[in-house]
Image (cartoon, rainbow, N blue to C red; front, side):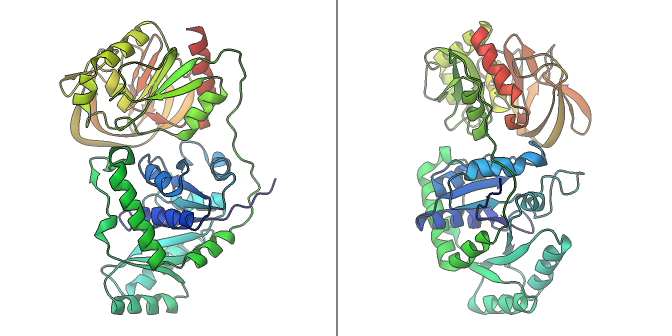
Length: 449
């Protein structure tokens, strides 16, 4: 099947250039024109897709060639873009920055090539004029298979500054598709792991997205950007579908959400549903009980360290989680979920499912991981290989239980995580679309536990 979805990639020479402002503002501006916009983010970032969802009214989705494999990038893109008029893909880091030591793998450039999509380069022009042409020429010529088709100039200081920049890029033959001046109102607050998620500041986030849309609408040539997206070549791949495994009984799988647990991939719930589960969301900050009939529990990533006092104060739910785990029900916990299952976090009582303590740390742990399952668990049999990502400023002691979850190369070899009865808890974020058997195995255990 040959599919054509108008699409473009918003990239930059480096982090901090304004990709998120431009990509999110462009999504919102196009949606305001009545277009159905499909939002995507390159890499494992969980926070930017939340802003994309506000801008478009659709679920923000990730495209990660490391976690899922290059062969799944286009199918997952087509799955997310089904029924849309246009797709906007926000890049990660600098255009050619990918998995450390892996060449182009998982870089924005890699994903752009896999999608056969044109690239718009967002350049922070605050401290340069004619040099912008050399910078853009270098990025445009570095890899001939990456089509850098235009530039959006960010943080332009004055009309004269804009004139100099345009002259330089005109001499280099690079179209200027937008010029944005400094606009503090579109800034979004950050903390130890990046932007503050939408779930924690929805009203302010809506205002920020509206400001981004206004800035992009005023400063960018939307018609030219749409025309560029429509120039993207046809795609021969077919859209990804979650494998369906019909069954008479649909066990309830509770999935933690709310401000403390905002890190998740949309495909996880879709895979659980397709595997036969009834997925029910709940908020550990507010709900004192698990959803009625819960047979399995998924607690993903987020910021429990920010909400430790509130999570600890919800003693009825902590007890319900502990009782569920003690009864052998399947429990899958990643990163923030791991902390929630510990005895305590920064000295405050948590669920006590794991005989471990967690605390904040000054050290940032960040990076992709190759992993192999060490112990049989509700997610995977021993020996199953997956790729994951770590992103945290916390420490769990001990770092692994008697039956570890994973053996990882990071870059040193080590074991980490916990497998006990029906519990699988680990720092590792994984993308289940890369191994659909994970969701199927989890749901089957929910039926039989």
